[in-house]
Length: 493
Image (tube, rainbow, N blue to C red; front, side, top):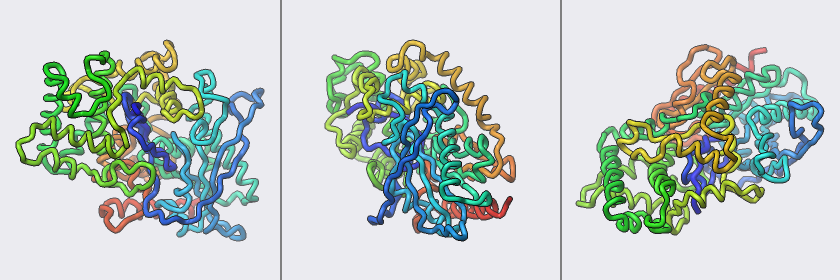
């Protein structure tokens, strides 16, 4: 398969299992499945009726949205808080209903746990297909309105008194949604834990690969790994021009470069750079499940391979890492075809799992295109510039989705939510220094009622996974701090 997608770490276990979701486009940040799952009984899926368009009073169309509930710890006679985990750009994973840091908090505070699947993802299908016309009802704003209606409805269904407090949890894009939900609907949500949430919409997300480069040095305490990656990509670029058959063989491509277009070639270079994007973004987390790609691959183990003595040129060591990635994702070869990628993304059937929905949201709300800026080009080359990504929006959704359109969309998103100047209390913003997405989030406390926790050495949504004895000390402290914030909030009126 071919497509690479960039999602954030979005909550509720929406991890994609194949490289096809990453090729050619920026990486998202989606959340993996929780670790240490031992076959516990999982809750059954439930359904709730939602309006198709919350912002059109005369549009009475409705659809069914999926959700889960775990009330194991909850006492209906003497109710504790309600925890709601927000779904993101992928299907809900019921294992999050019995595992994860939020379940550990729920046990302590005797909370009911609910999770709501994001419209247009998983089994929550508001429209008959994924045509561009139908995708107009896919947005963060509609998703927040879904959550608000869900909270109001369940408060009535469970006959909860008004003193029962709701706390929202989310990671990556859902981490953003958690903060925005608290800001937009403070009368419904008492507090929020926003993990790895990018609050700043940005067309040219050049900082992403800058953090990747920095993380390779930070985790290995040396520049040697970066130097080897840089040397390898330069050798690949040279051989690509002088002797491409060597690169075809070493990197196991599906078709010879003699048949490749310029966009195909740019896709190829983006693909081999993206191996490192995934390695860094999910470095040493505690997830399990569909995506085991980085389970035994860490920055340190890969860098040891790249810096090992033995006389092999850097590009061969890079190709060896790339081959491991292909094998771990069951790819016989790297299909770097741009046309194949666009065709897959243009498929409007619900059976299509190419990431079309999330790509639409980047083209209409967020941008987030992870480009090879000038300094990053020294390491990974300069083949995946901004125009490479914005052209994909036009090729998939139509000519009006050009760079100016997307830029205007990001400006509106930032104006509406406040970006890094968001005005919301009782929100804790959690990030890891190794996670590239922290560059678009709040990492410094500016208000005692909206603290920030920046965890040195951890990756995307690391604080959300179940705790482990092997966790870094700063990660352990962060989880305790989050628990303390929740405790203090629950004592507030």
